[in-house]
Length: 254
Image (cartoon, rainbow, N blue to C red; front, side):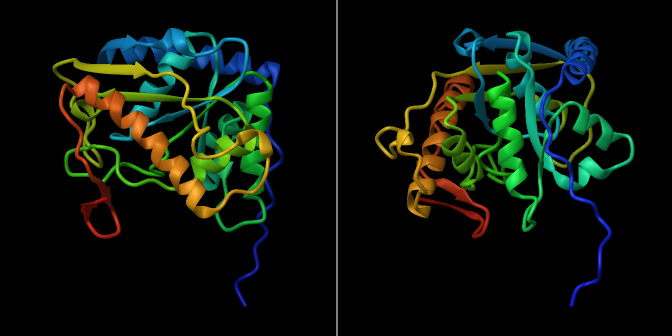
């Protein structure tokens, strides 16, 4: 038997007026600091809704890019929430802030795992935005194209019924390479592009509200990543690889 644990389950989290006020204050400071480090080129943010909650899916190329992905959401008046490891919500200081801001804890392999969906639904119902990376982690593709994904983003999107918007970005890696050290000078140029809401109707009927097969979830995941990849190819001005990098095998596969 495993060692006993006194870890208390996290409470159900939802946006609050005081939490939103704190978020806006911290966001204003972060925005000023961000512009001190990056020259930002932003397009397509007008596509994001202001009258309902939604989900953003994006590529992941640097530990700093969550701020970049959140930027178009924040400047259009919506507070973005992220999925983060459940352990971070228990860290002294940081955990209090994450819970107060109603970010979304992910407790894999735990009875608390369903609370990720509950919290995400609370955020969407409150008119907020949930940001998630379909790849699940930093891309391992040697040229930093999106790699094969995991089905968590698809499960979340289908369960909440929220519209899903693709966001691609490029340039963060020049400031902070994957697992590298920051390069502060010169000031780095970052491009961000927001796409149209993703249509999944050719794969699933979201109105049915039923459980989806693994194949359907995989197809929705790949469609999300394809939409993000198309935007990234536009930003980079080059064609994306025909095959997706598989981190399990260390090569690109169809």
